[in-house]
Image (cartoon, rainbow, N blue to C red):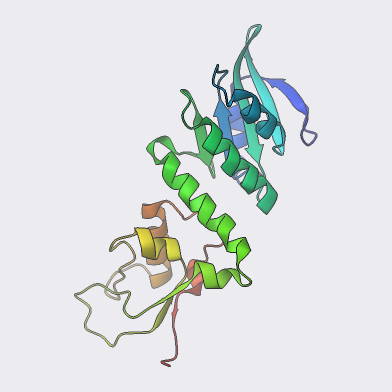
Amino acid sequence: MNESRNSLALASSDSIVELTSRPAEFPIVIAFPKSTSIVYPTAIATAKAASRYHEVMDGANLSLHLAAFAADRHQFALAQSLCRLVLGLRGVQIYVNGIHQSDQEWRFIDVLECFLRSFSAQDWRAHCQVVVDNPFTETWSGKAGPYLLPCHYIYRHGSQGHALSKAHPSSLTQQIQASAARVGCSWCPNFHPEDFRKLDAP
């Protein structure tokens, strides 16, 4: 298989397994079939700009376009564009860190767009991290914050998913990571659960 950047390679369906098994190199992999949709030519052009682009053949027929995106801003922006183009098509497959997204495709795009918006801020932490008064469950009666919650997406979408407990056998950092996994944002490059901490009161 030709591994040069942006090159066309004819491949088998095993290529999906091979590329999704390299999440550190290709955190986002998108596969989509041939289509009569008006967006199809644009989708192909976008996919060909990925770090790896393959055409999966079934005999002499094109079966899937396969695009694997590297972990950088430009590639993630391309992945966002491709997702918006192909999500209405049948047979689309999206993998994030090797995990098939199944019914969470729209959440995946929401997280991806949240990450891309952080580049518009002078300091990404001002976009990504939020100060909360009390991140603990109601059963905890200790003194409240302020606390630095390292993910605004968890804060917005987690309902009580970011609620922590000092009585839990897992560490607070591990609980933050689990909260991110519940809402689907644990793969975000800007997510650093170790940044959770109590702040000095103003």
